[in-house]
Length: 274
Image 1 (cartoon, rainbow, N blue to C red):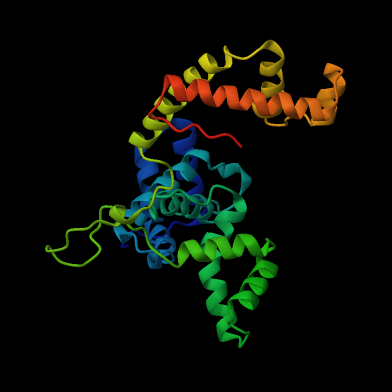
Image 2 (image 1 turned 180 degrees about the horizontal axis):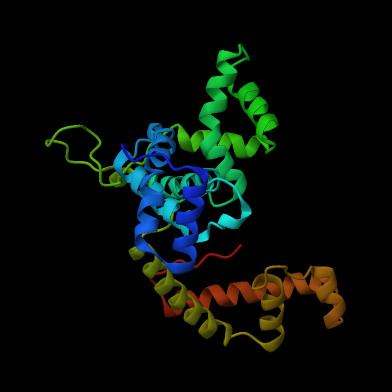
């Protein structure tokens, strides 16, 4: 903070020496004289809860990047050019470390992330209604984004990360983690295996029982009962050249033969048909 300020010509000379001759001494003087700028910009982001020292270090990275890209012949002050790089480096660091879930991957999300709290406070001070709907509407209009984007970012900023391994109750005596209360709607593995075994077993039994039917009986059952969109009695009768009542009689007889075959071969099972 005690580094002297640079005059325009001295600053241009140092930037030229670093750009053309890669003079490390020139780079050191140029960057050291702008450390107060890094600290001032980093202080604007201290409310995000990250260590101030880390914010300053990331700002230094942006400062060095600005020194590498600065073109002194354009006749602008280095501080004006470096401010953008310093702020960009600090913002990128915050987006990477503020939450374990990466956010701010688009320009809209970045703008919301860094401006939502400021606009909320500004609108509240201005006497604008603070109801969630009206607040999101005002912020969306101010930034030029959709209300859904504002609501989503507002929800993310309103809470912190929670570990699934964190105990439900504070203290060492807590025995349950948050993950213990997560509900999985999928069937258990033993149920899946049991269903797979039962399905295969019943399929084999059905194939054996179907072999006891005549070709016409088997065809009628397959068309009527074993397809997702079964044929109607009328359409199947037209295909086979018989009346729909005759199709019903054959189907009824085939179901009874199928039931008898399954009961005979597997007496402890109770096959049902609908």
